[in-house]
Amino acid sequence: MITISNHSNHSNHSNHSLQKIEILFHSFLFHIIQKKKITNMATPGIYIPNLVNNITEEQLACIFKKNNILTPEKFNFNFKNFPNGKKRLSVFIHVKEWHTNETAQKMRQTLINNEDVKIMINNHWFFICKRKHELHELNEDQKDIYHRYNT
Image (tube, rainbow, N blue to C red; front, side, top):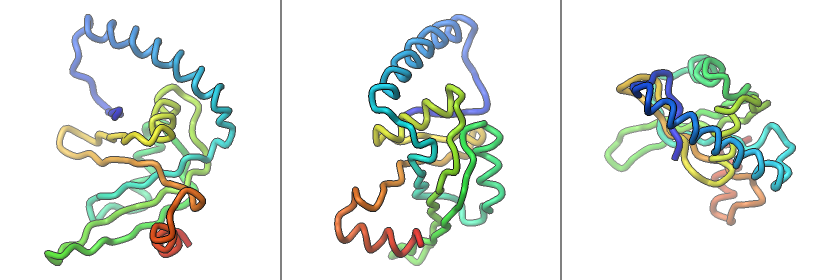
């Protein structure tokens, strides 16, 4: 899991070490992207399984734009009902284009690898992003859910 955050609490020494690691990671990432021939800049889409109920499409789009991660094309907001009567919001994000900076491509590759990405909004609020699977990757039960929330 990678974390994208707007703040840093590292010392200069640890920042230097992290920069070295990040350079190595990005070199490795470049080779993976080249090897997999990822050419569609709209994939993958994003699934956020759990969000606060009162977030708007504009607020969510602003988070991704502010962090220079992606340009969203469409949002599908869905409420999930739990047995205790509570509702939680989940969102499918259809991506128009992933940005080409290191952070955006790191997040994109992490999702392609079916790993979660944690987006930190502040010290108290975050959400988890997962890869939105395409229709041909799903079993029959999952396809029914896909059609219900992605049409």
